[in-house]
Structure formats: C-alpha cells, structure tokens
Image (cartoon, rainbow, N blue to C red; front, side, top):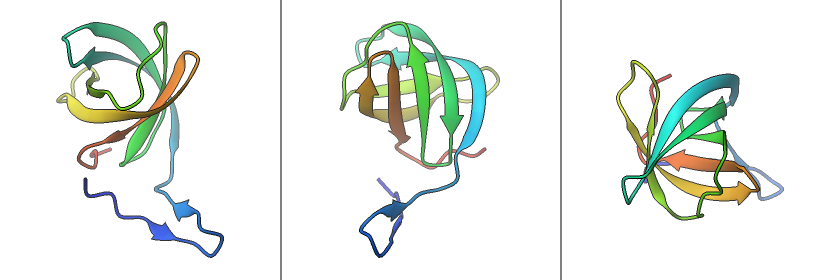
Length: 93
C-alpha cells in the first residue's frame, strides 16, 4: 500500500499532517453506487468524510472531487455518518 509511518515511543504511528477542509465530493462504491459526501479533513495518506449513508469498513471506493482525477481508497473506520479512509496511492495536495 505504500504508507510509510514512523512508530513513536508510545507505539503510536506518526501520520502526515491533516488539513481541515469542507469539500463536496462523490464517493463511488464497488457496485457503482455514487454517494454525495463532504470531505472534512485530508492528508496525503487519507481523509475523513461525512455521508448521509453509513459506509462499510474495508470497502474499496473511488473518491471524486471536482477538477481532480478520481482517487482509489479503502474505508478504514466508520462512526455513524462519519468515515475515514486511506488512499491506495499518496494523494497530491
């Protein structure tokens, strides 16, 4: 997957800085279902979003933002209508 993180003394992985945003996007699931979502933070490695539908952990998705090429990702966690995922390739911000 290419994610390169350094493990710190307490056992936590240091991650890339997150940028707080409020950006409308479309999330396309493996079955082709497209959902309108709002990205609320992003880094080169991943993102957090809000969705009207609950997403499934482990599902592979395409994240489409206006004027940018779609990016493949995997949903890693969900909490109600919030979810977080990792890009399969680092995103160019």
